[in-house]
Length: 265
Image 1: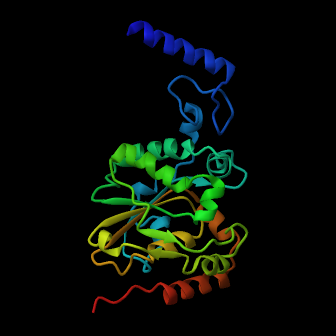
Image 2: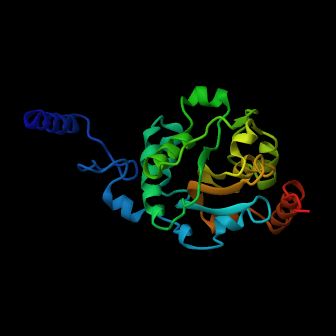
Image 3: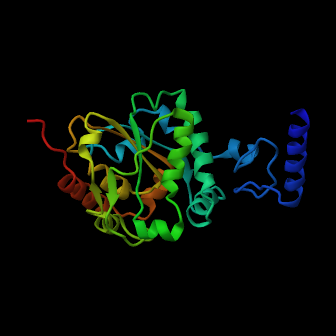
């Protein structure tokens, strides 16, 4: 047994010399025990720490639109930052395992804050079947797998269907994003989710349009509670950098009109 472990350890070291595992952020070889990102990049990861703040900017993004319990994002995604490579390689580089690893890191850090307390099921934002066939996987589902590995909360990939294959949200304004995702999700099994606390998981939060469209499928389910968790979010200043005051006013009016929660009467 001891000899087998020594051989495995030697073989792993030998393969690392031939095919070194590198940090997806800085490109340096990973040390033994490091996964995806090196210790230095992990320390320097621009964490939001929003899970420690009540009424944080992510929660405020959804105020008055869904029955929200809590919401947060793990780190800031900023244009030009090397940390954007985490998401880029996860979504477009075929490295789905990055999602599971980062999902574990994120869940482990949020666990002590009781963020996951009372949550019954995780629903990753669905991809359209054509897009998932092209990519080969759903990156949000792999993030959810990492969360489940730490928390034990089950994943549900069947209750919400993405019925429309939409254009990319990149370079679209807030109103264009909202129109692009309107009606793209369909709730399949409302009875299964009745009385449940749902955690919606996605890779990155920008304007919240896709997440809100998904969550809005759930608002009429009896006794539903909704929380939201994303791996990354744009910083508040970046989120507002491409918006004019008129866009913001239109956005608020549009959201209140389209996604006003039903009265309790």
